[in-house]
Length: 66
Image (cartoon, rainbow, N blue to C red):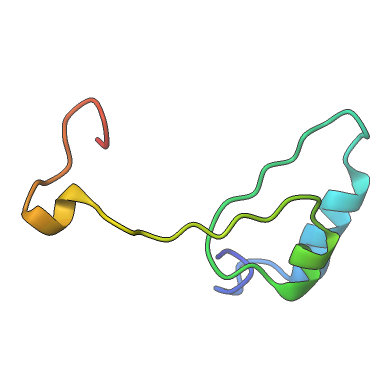
């Protein structure tokens, strides 16, 4: 999202990925990853909501979501 919002260029993110030590696990989260980041990644997961209690009117629960 930070790249999509223009907070920094995708090239800087790719430099960060390339510079990480081999034994370091780098975990990036967010939506709409740049195709160059997806191509460079070892694992990409696309999560989507199938069912959520929020749709039944249950709001965020203290200690769980907030």
